[in-house]
Image (tube, rainbow, N blue to C red; front, side, top):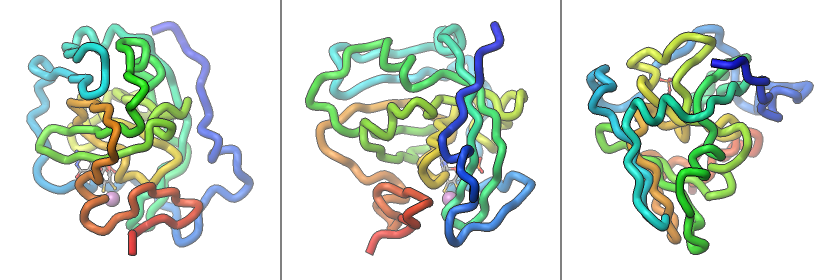
Length: 199
Ligand SMILES: Nc1nc2c(c(=O)[nH]1)N[C@H]1C(S)=C(S)[C@@H](COP(=O)(O)O)O[C@H]1N2
Ligand SMILES: [Mo]
């Protein structure tokens, strides 16, 4: 690819980069429920559905030909580890927006993963300029356990919102709490506000 300018997630510009209640780790823990899906990307499709003018199904080849961005971000997991200085490469959610017309009633985005995991985001959080569908981390293709072939990365929210093995993006008028959000995690998940769990 042509070398793109790196977009810095704004939290990486903070003087104090560790949110309250978090501690630094240098490694990258693997966390998910269930099993890692098969690593064959040939049958992978990304479905863009819900409140769009026309549902879209992108093959892996079509997805890989979309324009790329690089984003520099920190990771904050609600289980209290934080990992700084991550360089992601992939397709920005802004580029996804160009593929379809989103109907004006859409206010929320539901992300669907292989295996049934879901997470929900406000439309505005999904389209922040540092949000991407990542295919690489620190210049290496994502490993299966970290979300190959495609994972969402939402740098400004706790890492459970960063769904691995993404296969669907659904635009909705109503919010639909996702896997963790309907099991006690906060609906929004801002690490700087410690939005860890809902009451
Ligand atoms: N599909 C899917 N994505 C997921 C999860 C999951 O269980 N399934 N777990 C989330 C949680 S709780 C965390 S902390 C991060 C962990 O990502 P990592 O294993 O790459 O560190 O993935 C998130 N994305
Ligand atoms: Mo998590």
